[in-house]
Image (cartoon, rainbow, N blue to C red; front, side, top):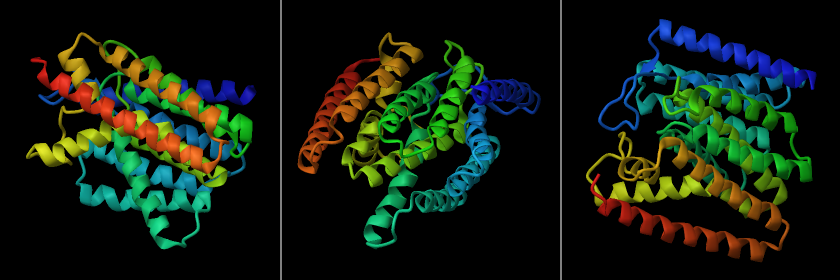
Length: 319
């Protein structure tokens, strides 16, 4: 309990200090035609996410060194991107190195190489997915809380990871939420926040998937994955836009732009939907592999159909 109080106080003070420093040094997000916000807001508030991982590393006698190094590596690069806007040619190599370090921490074998390379690409995809989905107030914080609470309850059953790694990150998200879960946010997570928490989610999910031999662990990010995946396919085949450019085609963006849903309502909707899926995972991850794969592909199909229907309906709304 003493550690939790220390973490709350430390991250609370650091978040306030960062807010003041970011204002002083003009680390801000200016709204443009592709933004879902209209007010100049401090960016990079998610800096406390990698700090939470570092505090865990120090308190628990340097546990998970490769994970900590990987998260801090992409956190530094992502923070520089928040300030200067780096080219993807600079960002991607560091992301691959960070994911390699995370796979090293998990202990994933190099052979067969095609599985290892798939995991490497999947990890880079996950952390960028969290970045792409960070577009409205509350969505990164609330969705990540939903995912991490699912991981926490799973870990309580299995005791595979040091649970405080998850708890410290939940505390960081709640403190971040004090500034962000508002109609007018005081600061955004920024690339440093969304990518760092995405890296942690990737590590935790793949760790459970590998050691529990359960494909259902992939469903811990199915809500984000459904939105990001369908949007990526839409932009690839139906628009002339580069898939790396900012846009407003995500379903969560359209729900805000073309309906009466507020930012926080949409964010809560995504978080609640994901937590519902997480409860299904917690009840079924010990079933036979055949049943798990059947459930996995069944839910994937349901989400694909649902997202296509919702996307088409939202496209028809003039907003």
